[in-house]
Amino acid sequence: MADPVELVPHSAFDTILTLDFGSQYTHLVTRRLRELNVYSEMLPCTQKLADLDWKPVGIILSGGPYSVYEEGAPHVDPAYFELGVPILGICYGLQEIAYRSSTDNVVAGTSREYGHAIIKPKSFGGHVDSLFKDLGDEVKVWMSHGDKLAKAPEGYHTIAETGHSPFAGIAHETKPIYGIQFHPEVTHTENGTQILKNFAVDICGAKTNWSMGKFVDQEILRIRKLVGDKGQVLGAVSGGVDSTVAAKLMHQAIGDRFHAVLVNNGCMRLNECEQVHKTLSEHLGINLTVVDASKLFLDGLKGVTDPETKRKIIGGTFIDVFEAEALKIEKAAANSDKAGKIEFFLQGTLYPDVIESISFKGPSATIKTHHNVGGLPKRMTEGQGLKLIEPLRELFKDEVRQLGRELGISHELVMRHPFPGPGIAIRILGEVTPERVEIARQADHIFISMIREAGIYDDISQAFAGLDSNRAVGVMGDKRVYGYMIILRAVCSTDFMTADAYPFTNEFRKAVATKIINCVDGVTRCLFDETTKPPGTIELE
Ligand code: GLN
Image 1 (tube, helix red, strand yellow):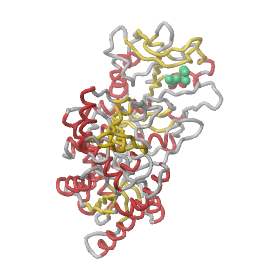
Image 2: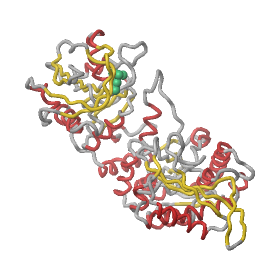
Image 3: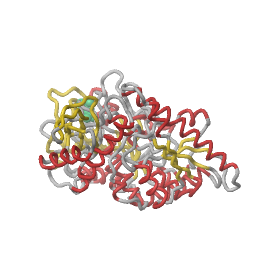
């Protein structure tokens, strides 16, 4: 079923379309525009205008790793240039504009230019000056390129230059087409946001009316239209921010016709199920069923030490349990005259997952399988014909947090560290037994509580206690003991692609180690994991 057309964001808001040529910064363009309250969407550079069922108010051609003159390099559909809306090319995008005009306009530079540069905007009057309006005589910008323009394309003014790049900015003499060699979307470019604002608001005339509050109203209407008066939606929740925000939005839209299911896989944190139950059903009023399947999961994990096998067992068991629950809910619903069939499955997919699936990163689009709460029940969505509802698919993580606040979800939950679907099982190296889960769980609780007490929880992106497969000797109360080793990990990261260990003070470390060893039976050592990502991953397995 298609989305009700008038309610999808690009139909309701003036939208800037960013065509992605594979730069690592492209999503930042979208992000910056939304910060300016201008709605923006990103699509792969291979998107044909004819296949687009909406009209953007402006187009941005992003940077990219290729050289425009290289064989197989991606090129933009020329139809966009006939659409009559303003176009801004950034780096590769600039080169693409120049190359379209004449293939000898772009050449390999003799030296690459990475890092800061100063541009001096030049004035020609009229629309040509609009891009660099309110920027002053010199702008500190950030460059990352090897190719350059050999000359300004015919019909274009050179509106900025640097020592290395005589054509750091160009503008068409009569049409609103611009190109810049530097990246306005990165924070290293001073006033970069102003340049994007000049383009989006002044040049494209985009209304600055995108806001999270409007998004909520809009999304609620969209969900209601999509689901209808009787349709029902099923969704898994984990207590994490994404699934909670998505669930709350569904509840707001369709009330109890949204059924949330929390599966206790026996590898959750201390008191987690009780807490999630309390927050979701008591505080947020969501129709929630908690299924305790911990024994089933832990029995399945008996004797298993391989990390991938653990994940598969947990994922498979999750689907079985979830499916059985869905059938029960369906049966109960069939007896009520208020509701219809369960037709939809809620998924908390975020924009970065969408971007990764559609982005142009190589000769063809890379497709990533999403891993959501306990793994996507493909068998259900495909086999039983459930349709996906993904209300967060246009949002970045920090926007989801903002949305959570907007929906009245507590600060504590909104700022919660991510927790993997397989839970503690992948933080226990080696076999997962009920005894070992309990040890890791108790240690984790102490570690996280002390982090909270120290007031540093929000400074850390993710923290947890894991358990080593080996044991170490200790002397406790004059008795020789052979005990477990706890591994403590806390990292800081903005995107979870790279991460640094959090710099605890020595005092804090000692206090945590002492408390864990004193309070958790069977533990003789505490080790701190200082590994960065890469090469380490954030989780242990
Ligand atoms: N690959 C092109 C160059 O090196 C474009 C780089 C970019 O878009 N950042 O010039």
